[in-house]
Figure 1 (cartoon, rainbow, N blue to C red):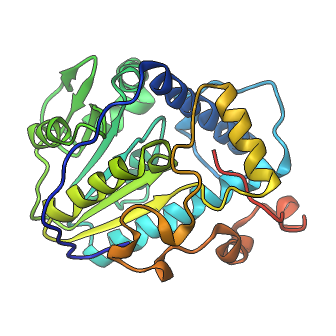
Figure 2: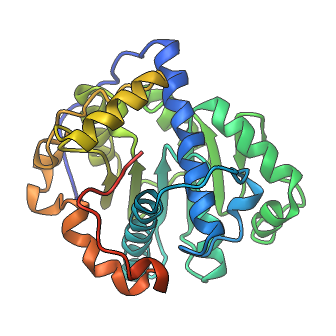
Length: 301
């Protein structure tokens, strides 16, 4: 995490191959299905995910369910802490948002920022835009906060007063910034940037460029990054092999938490491992899950 970051220069990195991008986009589907299953058996409440993601008939292992619970709960608590600190006078940029439903949940909790932005590959955004436009449970909450009767945008973008969904490549920083500003991103507002299993699919240089862009672009910024690290044990190697079969390569998987690109901007003490913070979530687990012993390794996809 970082506040009032400043750096001198940044450059957008080169693009990966089309096959690599397709593999990374496939991880969005895998993660969304795992979350949907965990919600369906009571690990946490999310009434909106069902309108974006199908329910798989395949049961997921308890370790998978608990890992996603920890991921969702941990990031949610940090987001809400930021919103309370700023009294919601801020903006949130969810970079690589996939089928995330945080906007709708925050609205239900009366914790919306001034504006909530989501960014992902255009193909993923097209699917999400279609789901929002065709499902009243998703479109109505956005329209309730909008000054017009219809939502602005096209197949690769959707914009409203409090919510924007943008198709963009995080490696192309100039185009990313242009699209965000077109949707009224305010660089003077306190800004929370969130990445979940995003930086690890980029090269260290590309990730560092993204973090430096955030440092240079906003007057006050906080960065939440949830990534796979320390992947040299057997569990990590199995994950890497499975992802490679899906054409998704963990380009920065060899990095330790303290060596993540840009981590030196705020210090390794702000990069805790999930196992070290997981016990603080125990009281929020469903009773049946809380009774299980904590896993040695918690999965990240």
